[in-house]
Structure formats: structure tokens, C-alpha cells
Image (cartoon, rainbow, N blue to C red; front, side, top):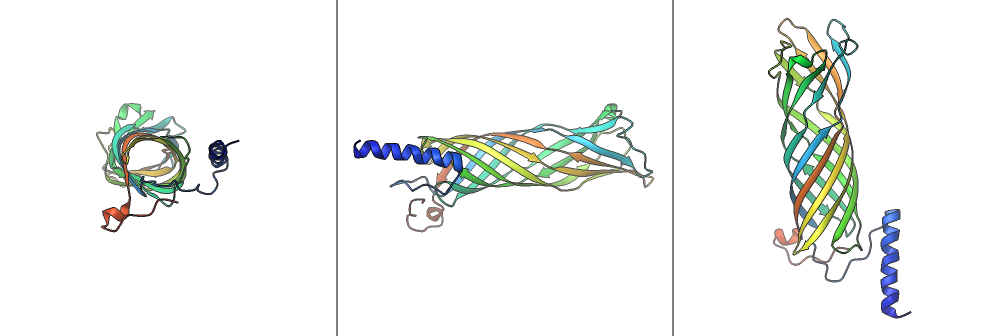
Length: 246
């Protein structure tokens, strides 16, 4: 076996071991210029797998048992992603956007139309593992959390007669998988999928002081197509050339 053949075989074995075990980061490639910071702009589709767990009036009437429920509209949003690479394999990502969504009545209250509308700020923070040894393909997996802050919430064009509505901030666990295709020069095209499990409490308030409160699972699936650019953040800060990632 020649030295070159042995070297190629060793690289393949290391790549396979990393993919299976998600172990420590692999050795840096000489002359690696991908950089330690990546910005991605993308378009994301958000599909909610929502479910109303309770819907109760302030008088104690269980509207869920009577057949009433609600659902959240799906969305398409422009998104921004910032990723910092600690080494060739381990990175932390911040994904975010702003969006507007509506809640509509289902079942017994399906004819009531849009029963709430809100703007939201839903950042997702994940710790990622990036696989290498696959040429221009850079698949990765991640896990983290999402926080959703709701603001400018309104009753919407509803037939319930509510004068105000409040949504509690959401916090939940997120899983992620994706792949970047290296175009060269720091540029890449990517696909990313995230699944989040979280819920919120929604409260409708009426002029007579009564209210209806719902506990509602959101559980969104978020799929993103993006264009990325990766560089050394030290260059942006005006420092000398950064060392290759290790």
C-alpha cells in the first residue's frame, strides 16, 4: 500500500467515524480559507403543527369540550442566520426573522374568522456539528432552543366580540438538520430544516371583564433555502489574517 493510498484510506475512515460518533473535531486542512463566521440570507416556510389543549371561559365553561379550537396560519418569511465556528466541526448558530401570523377559529367557532393577529420575534439558538470529508457538501445537525416574543397583538376581524388579546412568550426545544454546498470564494447555497416544540397561552378579554383563555401548542416545522457567505471575523475587525480553523 502506497503512502498516498494509505492517506486516502485514513481520511475516509476518520470521516466515517466522525459521522457515526459525532466525536471531536477533525484536523484542520492546510490552507483552509473558509473562515470562522458565516452569514446567510434565506426564505423560510413555517408550518405549524398546532393543537389547542384547553379553551376555558372565566366562568369555567370548557369550550374545548364543546368542540371549539383554534389554529395558527402557516407563513413564508425572509430570514437571517449568523454562525460562528469554534473549529472545523463545532459551531453555534443564531437564526431569526420578524413575522406576522393570525389565529383562526376551528370547530364550533370556525365561522368567527380571524380571532387574533400578532407580530412575533422568534430567534432560534443552536449548537451544531458539521461533517466534513464530503467534498463541497457540508451537512450538519444541531440542537438548541427557540424563544418567541409576541408584540402588537390584536383581536383581529373576529366575531367573538373581544376587545383585546394577549399571547404569552413561547420557549421550546429545537432540533435541526441541514446541508451547505460550497460554491467557492466563501459563498454557499444551503437547505435547512428545524423542528421546534413549544406552546403559548392566549387570553381574549371582553368589555364586560370576562375572558377566554387557551393553552395552545405551536410546534412549528421551519424549512429554509439560503445563500451564505463565510469569512474570518478577524478580517472584518481589521486584524491580520486569522489562522486556519482547527
